[in-house]
Amino acid sequence: MSTSDGRGLRESATFDRATIAAIQHAAETGVYDIRGWGAKRPLPHFDDLLFLGASMSRYPLEGYRERCDTDVVLGDRHAERPLHLSTPVTIAGMSFGALSAQAKESLGRGASEVGTSTTTGDGGMTDEERGHSKTLVYQVLPSRYGMNPDHLRAADAIEVVLGQGAKPGGGGMLLGQKISDRVAGMRTLPPGIDQRSACRHPDWTGPDDLAIKILELREITDWQKPIYVKVGATRTYYDVKLAVAAGADVVVVDGMQGGTAATQEVFIEHVGIPILAAIPQAVQALSELGLHRKVQLVVSGGIRTGADVAKAMALGADAVAIGTAALIALGDNDPRWAKEYESIGSAAGFYDDFQDGRDPAGITTQDPELAARLDPLQGGRRIANYLRVLTLEAQTIARACGKGHLLHLEPEDLVSLTIEAAAMARVPLAGTSWIPGRTPL
Image (cartoon, rainbow, N blue to C red):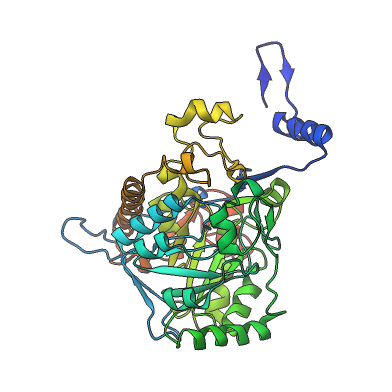
């Protein structure tokens, strides 16, 4: 409980200062808050899990002499050309419009340097992104903004987006100040006007129709490209089963810590479930179908470190995707822009107004002067460095657990620090064999 300057003042846990400010803002303006980023409330997360490193009952691997591989194949269920990636850490879909062209190019350069994939987003594929991305996943979204059959064929995989962790059940937003002539041209909409993406696809009404749509995508791409299906983490067990039944080669599950360019604050903080709770549900669904590791599972939503990568894979994921962390690696919230953040009413470490187009770092903007601050060559190097660190950290942990491949990590390598995380992740509470709801105390 917070107190103030020794006078015994007591801050309410229910009506804290952020809540009071939000109520006052709503009362003064009559407008609800829209922002970027992901959930900021404390949630059960990978920090609540620990690895059981090897000692006597397990032997660790020697880092200088014994291999720990990190490669992964995605989409080999039906596609003739599945993706072969050197690291299981991929770049999540983020649109041109939400991000500057320089940011999209940087992500492509960085991902290509370390042998992984990046992903388009709403609004289509830019030449910069395709030209600098060795492996590019093309998203098919409800809005159809920028949808182009030629881009489907130019991509290396297709991702049908049904939901996003920050706003499952809701559509996207791109406010008018970010709708430049180029963005508007790609989306065939007027410049300077707010754009709202649909919350559901107009081409199908359910899983049976989705199967038809996936078949169409396979025919357009001559059965070459893997088809992903992405869902926001909510009723994950059922969503994964239906995605597989519709024909997905890869299922992407995005937890509520996943970021967004713009949506309502109330959506970000109150809809969806943490990725920690979603992964075991997805693995259960795939296992019951006999397709775990055959239909690959990619998870996202709050991946920050190699430890997060290793924990996600130990719970059963085949790969992870990063979004917010990639923007931070590019320079988002960098203290070098502290004065400029303050000039627009924010601060380094707190900036989340991705929707307003005034990003001093030149990442979430379409302002030509601000965007020019981001050098794609330097940005690409920073992304590549960060991806390498994530991979090396995950390898370090896997070796300590005696595993010769990241995919060999398993739930048995994990314990939980809290009862809540133990129940969600379905691993024992540390120091016990108790998994709440699954084993006797």
